[in-house]
View 1 (cartoon, one colour):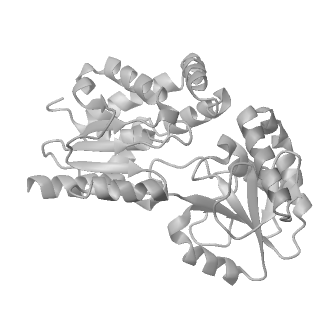
View 2 (view 1 turned 120 degrees about the vertical axis):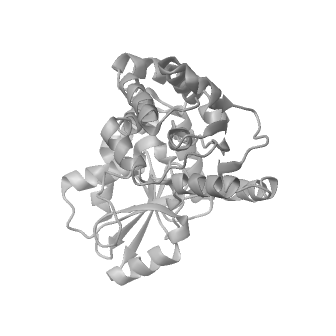
View 3 (view 1 turned 135 degrees about the vertical axis):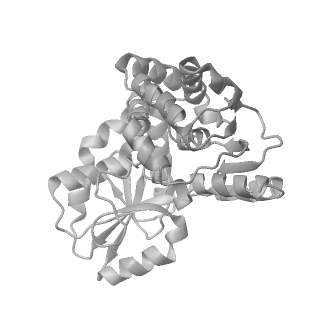
Amino acid sequence: MKGMTTVERIEDFSCLGEWLRNPEVQSELSEKAFYSNAWFTPENVKRAINGVAGWLNPDVLTDWLNSYELLNNKPISTGVVMAGNIPLAGFHDFLSVLTSGNILNAKLSAQDSVLMPLIAEELKKINPAWEARIHFCDRIGETDAVIATGSNNTARYFEYYFKDRPLLLRKNRNSAAVLTGSETESELSGLAEDVMSYFGLGCRNVSLIFMPEDYPLEKITRALFPMNQILEHHKYANSYTYQRTLLLMDLQPFTDTGFCILRESDLAGSPVSVIHYCRYKTHEEVIRWAEANKDQLQCITGKILPGTIPHGMAQYPTVKDYADHIDTISFLINVAANQFR
């Protein structure tokens, strides 16, 4: 790929976006992904594909990459340990490494081992020169830098194993919502999508809802009710039954909607099928909580806190919304500058 410019890379990924937007392609990819992982339902795979395909047009990619001073150095070899909690969780790293002109050595998650290779094969068809830049491997060997996403437990392993290399490390993150009581029915429907899409497995899924002291919990249960068909999924249903049984055995209070559990708690993270909620007296209480827990948060929906996004938009990040708020492109540029100066 010697001599490929940023403009040429943008053109190739724009062609990839056109391919991903094809309904027949989406159906084929969805079927293959679901066969490999039952959590990856066709609906969720198509949702993920449409999300990343929205980034892949010339204007969006040009605006994004033009905000950086991309260096014309020798490409750096970048090891990427990809997440697999939701479909295409590793795509942004795939996109960042390759559009910035570097070499990808990716270790796929066992949960998402089908989609990325299929997408990479299409990119190689668009331009065979990508063959030399995209590699999938069972382990990350010698590379110039590493990007790793995992749990808080695996993070300690990554820190030790990759201690001699520049490392961009991501850990567990969760998302929250803040209600004021003035939300419209449309906003509450959007909140329900933020909570239940991808079965709540994503770091951008809302797992904790803040509400005023006198807020009727029934408004939340009504908003969630159209999502009740989620219980038809056997893995989700098993989690719901298990979590309900645990709470009953521990004599813990909770509200059972028949398909998910509402439990009063200010913990940002919650198990699949469990939604935490916390009542507040003043906005300042929520602001203090958000500041104290900022390292655990991916995003917050609502209106009263700085940097929040609208309800219903948690699962629609832009290409500039980096996981854990760590700028991947800047990381790669800094590694390259130090490597070859």
